[in-house]
Image (cartoon, rainbow, N blue to C red; front, side, top):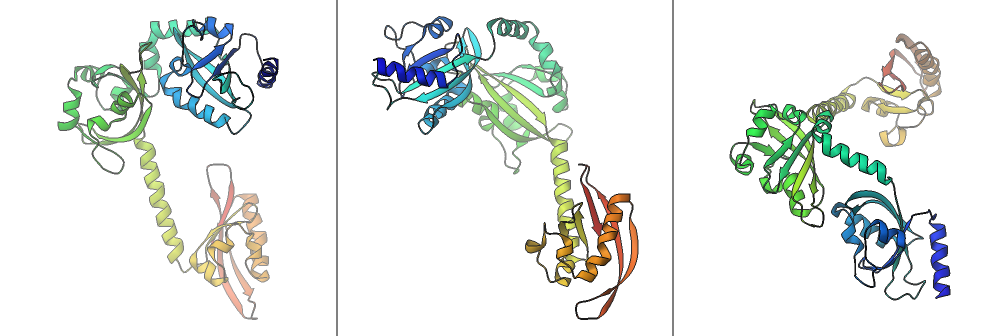
Length: 377
């Protein structure tokens, strides 16, 4: 027994012991084999040898998978960590360190040592809980995202003003809605981003109620005005204490319409730009402030006997004949230093001894991220 205790003390010390820390030995299914007095007292647990208790029943349902993964991960390393919510009247954020000890001690049934400590002290958590109970509606209204709270049937219990704005309606109208399941199927048009109809049972909030886990998805909703809006639903099931089945669900709703529009426009502009670079007969190029080639026209690659794969990110002075490099280098620097465009006519001697006359435009490019770039053609 002394050898077993010596092994446990070493693991506890390595995990950074703190006064009041929770210590427990659990088996591979999460059943608590033994626990220290701090854990038994704080969580109002009976001595495990008198009454069996599973640590998974003390966790927020959303965090059970994370705890099981940490148990599994601990088998392959010194320990695994997880920040989870633990029940004691209300949920406490707790940081756990889980160490696999199955091959290190012979204590019957013990496979893992769990060490944990609360991230928030009792008084602060009590104040926060009281604040939520007294002012939850004000808190909801202060959020930048829309909020829906729905019951097991999907009927609306509560919403904030932002949710009404996202759906292009009023709070009064939202609270007048009944039989949402039927309206979803008959009166409303809701699809995913691929344009496929999303049935009521397949919505993030109903899937969260069915699975007991957080569900997120982007839905495209057609408003009464005919406007389509992209909305990110993140739906979290809510549980009554002591029950494993959720009794309601809260959804955080973010309007992504503008972001999706900008993304589509940027994608279309990128396709248009690449089409231009592929088809223009001009020699066009873009470099960064260090002279590395970022992109060039198809004609540029062909003219200098380069490929896009082999040229991008290399210094442009290493990619063109010395006579061209000499003609361009100082002008690139001038544009970088002054931020002003220049136009020049250059007579350039080619490798075979022949001469070419080029009309060259070199200009600064604004990126909006503070990076300096130069374009030319």
